[in-house]
Amino acid sequence: MAKPSKPRNNLVELFRFIYSILVMGFHVQLYHYPEDEIDAFECGAVSVEFFFVLSGFFLPRSLEKINSDPNLNFFKKVFYFMKNKITALLNVHLVANVVMIIILACCETSNFGKKFVNGIPSLFLVHMIIIWAPDFEKAFIVPEWYISSMVICMLFMSIIFLLFLKIIKSIYATIILLGVVIIIALISGLATSWKFNENLTYDLRAWAEINIGMFAYYLSNYVKSKTYSEGINILLKIVEIIGYCLPVIFGVIPVSNSYIVYFMMITVICAFCSCFITFSGKGNIIKNEKVNFVFGYLGSVSLPIYLFHPVLIELIYYLDKDIKKWKKFLIVFFATLVLSFAYRIIANILNKVIAERQNKKQKEENDNIKEDKNDKLKEKEKEVLNQENKEKEINNNINNKIEINIEEGKTSSE
Image 1 (cartoon, rainbow, N blue to C red):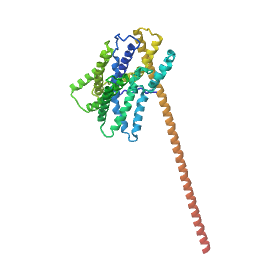
Image 2: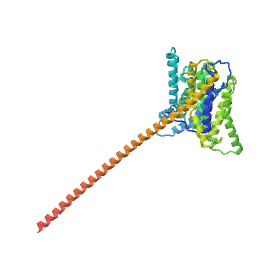
Image 3: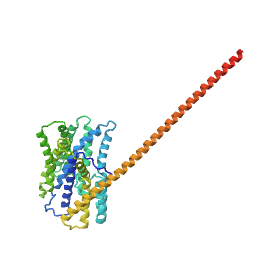
Image 4: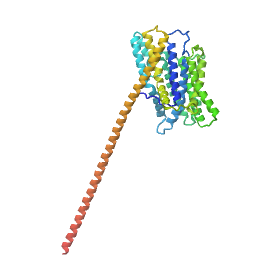
């Protein structure tokens, strides 16, 4: 099972949780209600920008680390990098999708076959690679377009990054990645009269924002090594908090989603600033261990929240299509949080059991190896002892013969 994420920075973990709540609110008010109504969470989708930038922040660090291993060839480096990324989300992804398939099988009996076949690519998180058609809505869990785009972009970005990392510094490889997405956007725009399909638009958005997160990583390393005046340090702390909180305000206020494009651009800037300040160590630092633990744990349930809430929204729709919106908000929010924390508790227990079994197995293997070594050592000692006995026996025989010869010599002389 997926392990709970370690608190890389507890302030980031807190806002991972808050932004996942914003996405949940956005989808509750979006699905199955008139589009002309303006509700709270109308622009909650801006939270996705934060997740893309944050994912991009850790991308170069992971690639640089795996590239430093001399025992791995190029293909193994790409394989292990993608394996780590997919493993982190695979279990909760499968749980959410299996439950969604069961719901569709029970409630969409007439259309289930068609929906199941159309949704198969999303089960393997490859549906966003289809950039010539708007197929993201055919996924079992539609909001997984974000995860699919992130995984696909990271696959191609890791290949390009590692190739260029052999000859240039990693920051220059990042600039090349940015150049690649600009070229793709220009070619696609000219070929389609700037009418991008939604899949392609979302993939370009993911690539660009992951790239921005990568630049935040390099800036954080630069700022980390610098010493600033007290005034600058206070300013950085203020900018960090504004960077985290401003997108939350955008996501909560009931304003027309015609502004969402502008909110998204501002959110990207905010995420860039808050990430590089936080991870440079110049931001607000929470020293209370209990608070740190709580924030870290909240961050660990952000992915389950992101993937479980669409399942609950779909289930409620089939159970009561005319349910009032405020009731739907309460049910989805409460049920999603309960299920997410329950999943994390169960995952932690299973992780502990698996870890104990692995430790036990490892201990048994070590004991067996130790026993084998002891047996081999005993056999070697036995062989040495036998050799010594043989040598003693030979020496004794030689001595006996010498003594006999001496005795015979004495006898003959007499």
